[in-house]
Length: 315
Figure 1 (cartoon, rainbow, N blue to C red):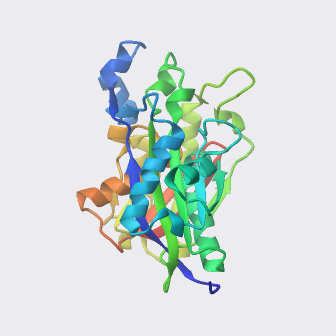
Figure 2: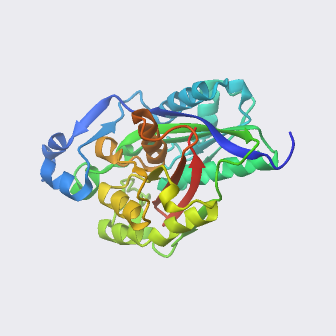
């Protein structure tokens, strides 16, 4: 393999659990309503995994679809990167288990836990490894089963969280189609989004603090465009982490991307952490509002507090 290849997304695949949970169903357990949830989050439904739809199983299903879309087989994959904060165990990670399940027997495998920014961190890592010539094909698999960490009696969080998976194959290319990553963190506030552990494995979040922090990242999103050499009005699409619709729309409006389609997958899928960006990107592609080769801005942000984003060309 020659060094300093370009890198691009070769294929995309997603998995959505079969079970759809409505706001009305949640309202049977906690004091809420469909109107209350929609007005504050934009969410109408979310997908919740059943017993067989594990983090690994969903990730493997999305991975196989990404391989098919890329026209590749598992034995051509040099590395599998799992992007997840809901691995079924601390060790082993999800990446090696997914690699085994899909038959990528010779691939390296590890996990990245960047929470809701995990997909963008993993894409950047994979692209850099391809450019360096360390690998030719990397499978990035973002898979989350947040329902395992949901306190279904906490109205503020149970309305948000959901399950799903998305994957992409990153491969060598003559021209680079994955822009430079812009990333950062505010590690001084780990308590804002957390799963405490030590006997408390439920997701906890300070909603208003998260909203204010996320909105403050508009200049960072503009910087992603600047580093990629793409003006906001040249973007065909924007796929922020699908935290809630108010944040998604505020970030999109803040950078002035007047011609871009904005992913609003959160309305039907809820907040799926690292999986939300590939799920949102896939929906835009499926509806035909963006096409192969279009420039799209990806931006993940969440627990840590940490963020990461880049401009990519659609697979």
